[in-house]
Image (cartoon, rainbow, N blue to C red):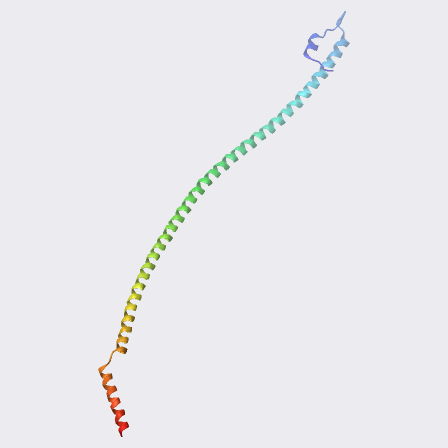
Length: 167
């Protein structure tokens, strides 16, 4: 039986010459005691359930706080890694640019050196041409020109051969 506050306030016992009817009062007290016992049991059970739920809630709050702390730490580490990676990338880029400038500079120097060597070879070729041309002209002059010594030798040879024929 469920008793409410209104039921208790409105409950009226019949009167007997000695007062209230003891049986009705005892019956009502039993009902009230049962109702109060059930209510106390429900109250205790709800209290235990509330404690369990509070404990779980506290555990979830701790987990939430731990997750939040972990997330904040992770975010901080990610930000630090991004900054470090950016710095490292900048350093690598600067080194690469420096090496590229050095390679280009060496290439320009080598190109200038090759141009100088080519010019020197051209000068040598021209000098060689001039020397060969002079040598060829000197030989041509020798071949075309009459050497007086050679003419005298040829004259002597022709006399010797005439004398041999005359003998």
